[in-house]
Image (tube, rainbow, N blue to C red):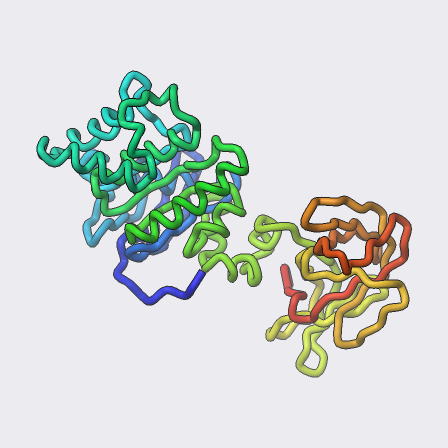
Length: 361
């Protein structure tokens, strides 16, 4: 995504901790969300992302720390007195109410004038392209349509922030891909700050302005999607985001370059720091090219190996290559000009030195 100008802070977590008995679900977390920004909380189950969201909604209270919403400390403010709109994974629509009544319910709870409710319902249904569905009940809607209604209901009250907890988790991939684009465009058009919880990496990379990767209650890294993917700050982030090849060995600094040694192979690492110990480096599967066994180019990092398996994945061909005593994954683009290699073929794996990064020193 394009670099954003610095904007006012809409949400701020200051050293927030949440404990459930002896379990620390969220551990001293601090971050900010700017006006109009979509920040994705991404992490595995149990990482603390949903608890972090629920504390902003008021469904949980922090054990320590403060939460600021639109320059107001809402740490101990009850949910109904916070200006937030929330979309749940199961949508939480009232099954006995029509689409119109579901949206109307929230507007009445927030004290909207009766004369303005009908117009507001029309406005938000038009936003989510459901203008002709006012009289439908949730049971007569598809999963994608229910998701749109839940979003419309949250937006109808004109909240200061939008909170979304795995909103696309119940949908199939094709519909999820479609709604990722629609939700991102809608959020950008409304310019509403959004905290978005997901365990789906692709979803976060596609939709977010920034991603906060969570693990065991803490934020491992918070950065724009491209930086998270290309320059992960920790080994956990490198392993959790996308597919990754890790190489274990020894790091040394020689003539201003960081060199990595494993088995009988030496490669150059994209790093500025001095390294003099064992560690690990990583390279993404799509960064590696499979070349014939006689290939040589000293400007690239190269490994000799043997193909042990080949998978056709449509847009890519995935190779599993035995090299230096371990199996590396390589994703080659499926193009007419590409050379297809077979199982048991001896090959050379080649990739740019810039694409070799330290995972652990």
